[in-house]
Image (cartoon, rainbow, N blue to C red; front, side, top):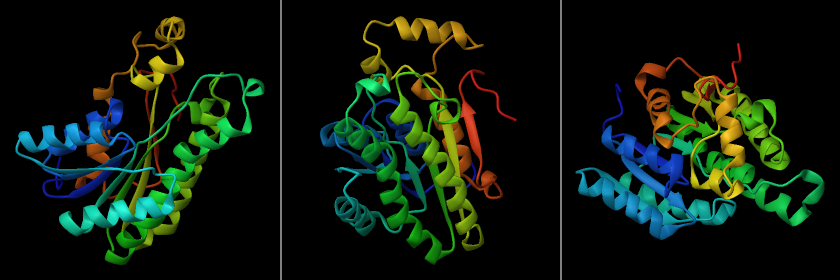
Length: 251
């Protein structure tokens, strides 16, 4: 993709699943990849693989729901790599349960990871981008945030909030040279999905509902991330793009 070589990017939730695939792809594109994840060891393995392939990467353990921890981690990465050009808010967490069977402690955890985390990341990183007059923010939401998802009420609510937040931030930052776009994956074969569906019954039902008759794979998404982060997408902001095998088709 045009203009990605040597760009500095920070990706949350990069230790596994979609996040790992995004890290690998942006590393291949020549980006300097900073990885934040609660799983510090897993993040370091991803960073090491990028370095072994000739790229540049740094990983740090970080709880993105903790504003001060985020600020410290970003400062460490930018001290070594320089000011960030791109932010990919990818980290997410959920556990399948009917809403009436859940408790406030569960809501708080889901909200902290899936919504407060992106708010923290954007508040700290987008301010620097705005001051410099350029930057790209790419939020990984979910089609659950567009159409709802039984058993994921709080998660879907958070992902819908990320969509609305992204559109609003795009309006606020457009004149300052910062674009903000959102990608909505459909059902994807990741540790998160396998965790909420250990029997595989839900996955089988989803495959039948998806026009392309398969679940998404983590490798289905990095190409769209790379495009939105590249110069080819400089005039695109405030958009929400589903990558879901046709499960959701929004005009």
